[in-house]
Amino acid sequence: MVEEGALLWEPSPEVVRDAKITRFAAWLGRSEHSYDALWRWSVDFPEEFWPAVWDYFAVVGERGDGPVVSGTMPGAEWFAGATVNYAANALRGDPGRLAVIARDETGGRRTLTYGELAEEVARVRAGLVRHGVTRGDRVAAYLPNTPEALIAFLATASLGAIWSSCSPDFGASSVVDRFTQITPKVLIAVDGYRYNGRAFDRSDVVADIAARLPGLAATVIVGAESWEELRSEAGPLEFEPVPFAHPLWVVYSSGTTGLPKPIVHGHGGIVLEHLKALSFHQDLGEQDVFFWYTTTGWMMWNFLVGGLLVGATVVLYDGSATHPGADALWRLAAEEGVTYFGTGAPYIIASMRAELRPDGLERLRGVGSTGSPLPPEGFAWLSDVLPRVQLGSFSGGTDVCTGFVGAVPLLPVRAGVISCRCLGALVESYDPDGKPLIGEVGELVVTRPMPSMPVMFWNDPDGARYEESYFADYPGVWRHGDWIKILPDGGCVIYGRSDSTLNRGGVRMGTSEFYRVVERFPAIEDSLVIDTGQLGQEGRLLLYVTMAEGEELSPALVAELKDALRTELSPRHVPNEVIEVPGIPRTLSGKKLEVPVRKILLGTPVDKAANTGAMANPEVLKHFVP
Image (cartoon, rainbow, N blue to C red; front, side, top):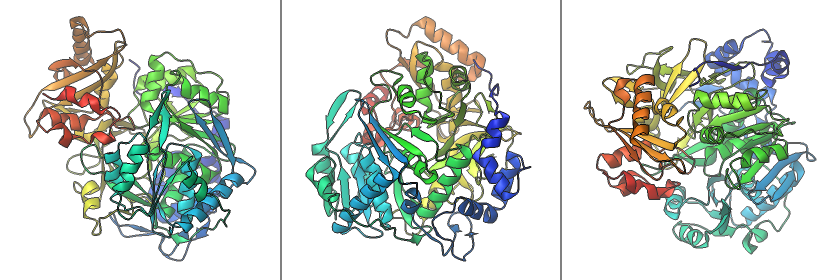
């Protein structure tokens, strides 16, 4: 076990000097300020901080003369009277510089300069206009992470129309659950895709989706004649000026336990937030090659393409992270000279367990991890194999399309600890009575508004569903649903979802601590822990494990597991039963489905406990039926 908080990396004087946040501080006249002082100013004086971000990056748009922020959560209004367009800001890079590198698991490679990308966006924009798409209309996409998805998104945004996407591994019902809520005018799709060395035909699925979308004017298939027709005519690249809060895209909650929430973000809030996050926290700019392993169905795709806002080259990868080998993503990064590599925490853990030693990464400066808590051992492995590289563990969500807490080049990296609360994000830890905690685990809350908070949920005219989702527990305060501990020096530790807490004899514990102990055993490939207690009554603590290839769940291993949990957590956290299953249920973005499994164990039918169309492996759910 690696000690939580162990120092792994410190920024050199050169890193601090050259960091983009250092340049920003100098521009502000705050060079002498520590990161903590900058953060405190950013949250105490948002009416100064966010206009400074706008001015520093020379955002394309009109600021207007309205207040920077007015009102409180929910419903705070930002930059009243301002107009902006995301696409205008994303496509202002030097036409000759490389904007996009697209790779797939077969080794296929395509590139686009900023000029070529703008030309393709103009063509698709003209095609959408011919299909009758105008400001406020919705364009839905069922596409993999390819240039066509990026081009279609930017074309949609340029018109002031509204984008929404799902990846082609989503089942038809899961897609329909999402897209019927927003009634798109145009559907852009593929009729097949490749993953893990296999080809998947989606033509029947696309036909089914299209037939179930009322009001659909056209279906365009990438790679077919309809796509070529869409982009057949060169058109002027113009950008519709829209109000700051005008909808940019609709993204969705996981939808594993009910109808997915259609979360709407605005042009202006996303432009400002992504400029801030990508430049100041991930230190990205025009010389960078930015990669994050994602699909179009996860908000990290929206974050990845935001790299264009800071002038970076973005790497779009379509395929499996482990095909043809476990090191597929690391090899991709080496071949393309990636300077910032992002992935989900499970890939870092898988790389550690496979004892990989990535090489050829001389240009790499940063690694980002998100999706689930990264245990201290993951931090330590990365520090060992890539000692020059800063690890940035981030935690946030689809809800704000960014991280609340993360890394910054000015601060050291410590095992298991997220370095800081992000600029402009007043994150606190609350006890059940709404009192702030330091050094203790509590609910992650945000106590002042951020520009990238949803402007609304679709089809929620009175805001009731939005308010219920975030503000029901602490009126006027955003409750995110994660456990967090904020350390006295501003570092943070995330302990998993607060709605899947283990509560044994009054001792609460996040599931991430449990998995850290269990999954360090080489014989165990994956695990899921469920506490069946409810309404103040203690239930059973069940540990489900998937064994590594060639391993078996022997009585000796069970005894070892229980002893480790007793010693390293508490005697109350020893499971009543350890059960072998062929797989752990996960969402399409890789998150463990603790809450749906708990519902199944308490008697909810499988089809009501989880939306199988939003799952990566729905076939395993039957193994959890009592």
